[in-house]
Length: 65
Image 1 (cartoon, rainbow, N blue to C red):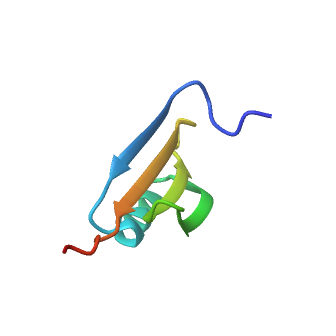
Image 2 (image 1 turned 90 degrees about the vertical axis):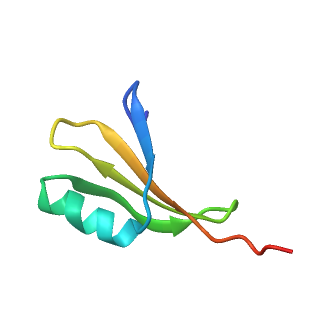
């Protein structure tokens, strides 16, 4: 079974949890709670009121040498 449709958008945001709360206020539904990816980003998946799957991600600060 396909989790998302043919098109899925991903947007980088400064604060995943704040963006998630705002999206839910405007009618999005949560597909998956925020998770830390193996490459270090915090990702959350949503579905828009029109059914489009959207990923919001927050890049974590990398150590600078």
